[in-house]
Length: 335
Image 1 (cartoon, one colour):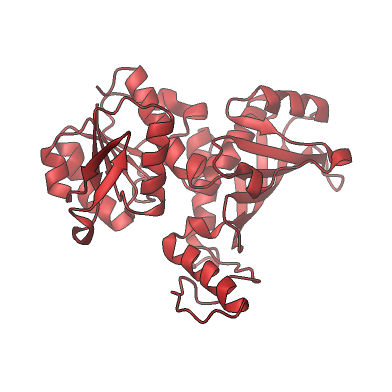
Image 2 (tube, rainbow, N blue to C red):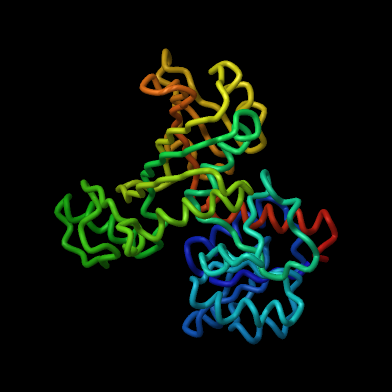
């Protein structure tokens, strides 16, 4: 199967290529796609080298599927052109997520909504993905009424420039005086920035409202109330979330753990006596969503506290997109 990766030289695009190889996706030809300045560069994949091409060239090469991670503006312009050529697009940007005609998919939850007619499929926000993977099994059993979530997000979610800023600030702290870019308005090392994406008129950031809206769409329940605070921290390896969940039905902690242990894509790490709980350093380069610090909220009834961690470049982006492609291939919707 011919597979295009649009944004192949970026953090997520690079990870997509890595995950395609690791998961042995049936790639007969890789088509790495990037901006004009990268055209002609070589990308290694499965023992071969493939030259980076531009957008129109990629369309002319007729891949079965195109994995997009090149930003919303690029997706809005080019995804319809790929789709018009009969190419299935799985898009990692926010461009199509809330379009009522485009499926927003986390395969463990709602892959069944996909049809062969879906030519643009949206990959959800990284923070939303890990939260719903953990909470959807509990929603099916107890029905979620309200979610309060605070995130602790890796600089890798911003991109290469943010990684370079963090590493540059670390080097400076140790006496090196090399130049580095500023991805953020403020220093990120030894700091926490309570803003991800731009502020909206309601005082929330765009990232926070993504979590609110996407959760309801993926879980197919508009009655779920969500409020979010998203925060950037000086970490690489994964996003963490403190989640407070109010259910409509009563629960027992023992059963909650059993449900999560049986849930696809979830690993429970929850042993306070051994100081065992999920951390980004343990989620790094893993595809699962890790859940721990499970405890009852003693301040109100039917409410659970949890700590959820996942590698934002993998399950939060690349792996989820490739799992969608795997489902499409299994269902013979792409060939």
